[in-house]
Length: 72
Picture 1 (cartoon, rainbow, N blue to C red):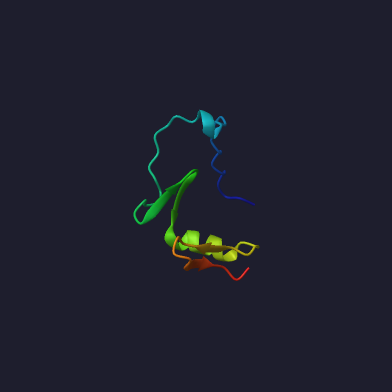
Picture 2: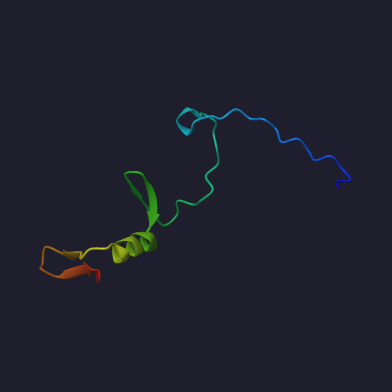
């Protein structure tokens, strides 16, 4: 049995993210990141993404030097 009455949870109306116009603080730093179409990624994140893709990927520069390859 509870000795105290629980606090009532406040009712807040749902606001879809596309309709949310409140200014919010960024919870992450943009330092050492690159901007892509949908957001920001660090070099480490891009490297991890490319290395773990389930396909063989090789990048060769204009001097026919292999710059990147994953092990697929």
